[in-house]
Image (tube, rainbow, N blue to C red):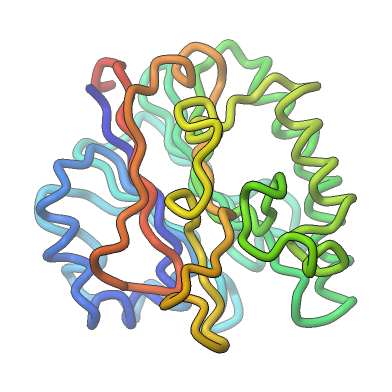
Length: 262
């Protein structure tokens, strides 16, 4: 069994102060994908760099206190790919790929377009530029699990107030259609949805800090593990952890009936 966790930390130092590492030590995870580090490598403590039992790899944004992705694994990968080779994207630290044998696990952080029209256009550019990489990964003959904050709720079932958000970033028709194409045209599997096709409130992974969104479970499902056919159909269990809060996102844990790649 292979256990993979994805978590947007909304600041690795903040999440550490809220107890994410004692929790992590109890999860029996093999690989952990992190998003929104909001830190540079020099800012990371020994625990953040190499939690007990793990080694860590990071792709930080050039801008301090912004974005950044990371990955923890029980054993070192055969290869690390840091970035997409696209300056506009790589300067924001949004893609980190670890190859273990014929399995690739990727930590991914799509832009949010909610702060301005300029950032929404940057999100659309990311989607356009990332499409061929997604297709290349799927056609590579490797098994791939893409973990991360996609900043898109795919269907009405994926957020509480879908009617009121149809003109808002994260639930725009263009964004949702793009994600549909990822699944239907390219053949990627939305692993949580394959396991739990009708789950609503239990599926949410992000809550606004405004109002009482967390208390009322007015959430969005925007954190996914998306996989190629072989490993995606071998997923056996998924869970969103909500007993403690380390971030405005919740960890998504998925178990795969798949041999550990080491």
